[in-house]
Length: 630
Image (cartoon, rainbow, N blue to C red; front, top):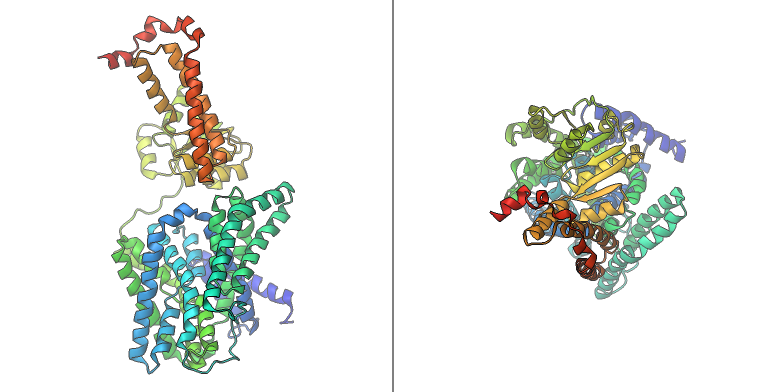
């Protein structure tokens, strides 16, 4: 029965379904729930799973690969380029300093050789990508300064695994242990000379980038045209599995490969579909991974060597915490973010299992050294959610910057045909204009200070995040006709639109954009209306300038209307080539020249000079021109 696949699936799913809701109810987070579930069903408590837990973990590591692919999809190349300083500086410094300090402590406190100490230092310098990113995402901390820096360090650590694997054989002090289990290498380029291996690795990475840039969008378009959703899901999984196999075959980290593919596809029109299709598989496999980590903790070893394991776990966490806090200070992180950054990364990582197994196979260390380290890393990973909770509940309130308690969203009591999301300087003008013309709207805003200020003026604005389905539902979006998205953050606009399109597809959506890139993105979504923030103000100012310079009113208004029409068409055309910089520049230059030619032709038409109806005294003497002429 124990070897039955369905029996194992039943045990793992039952454990997750029971333990995770309980952990969430107690405020412990889903990761800790999965880990506890794994410990409970493992060989030392209920004995529902045994040695096969290791095999399950190797399979479930695929969840980490999927997670990095999804992280890559969120990061466009331009954003990744902006993170280059924390990735190389913060991440590189963390790996080097932690490895050096841990190695020095091992040399001073034990009789182990320096080669073993260096291998231990490099192994323990890495943290758990799976646990940290999942926990930060769950707590909504990924976009904070501390979350972004933690991600940068984790990314640098994933990259560092490659040279560390290449470096380990040089540290061998024992005879190679062919019987060592764990992650066996199936690297087909091992037999090639170093220069050939380097060329093959570069070629593989280049092929992933080129395929993502020029081939995958075309393939996904063909698949999308079949209108078979399951085929698109199969293609998404095929992509991730294919890259995993390719990267494994050349000895690279599959997580790194899928991350690169995700970054390349971040600008694809199929980004959101890929995210939607992969997300459920990622969640299930990551849950399985955490359960397997819990089930694989060797309690016999802990029972036999409690003092040694405790020393290693506490030493690892304290040393990494101290180093991370100091590095965070050096890079100017604020205290709250620095503490969150340090507590989130102060554990060993899943790559430690790979590196320790590899070190054993290559004679770098013995089983007597690696086994206590494997147990300690697993325990430190299991302690991470508790450490972050400890920081959140006890450290931050005493030593962090005081922040206001998060305000609960308001109960919406309105039922109007129009909903305005974002009632700042832009949205409030729209709202007042509609109200002045007898159209009532429901106003939602995410800034509690702004909501309080507007209420003092007698405006009924509700506090809450309009990207949440429950708030839009409470605002009667299912009965409304029009949603105006007037928030000033492009990411938030996109979230609101995606929620509205998913749950209230009948709504017509009008959106405000701030820059060209998010304007192009919104144009591609085929919304009811897309409006550049400063476009009308700039055109009105230009028209007034023309009037002041002596141009006739009729001609100015006609020119204004014609320019707006050509400019909007021009931007729609330009949006189609926005992913190719060379074409974008060429189209942009031709488009601007074309508009100038059309406008000049319009101005020279003789018919314009025959309409004198616009030259009434009332228009000539409006307040603006009287002011300008002073």
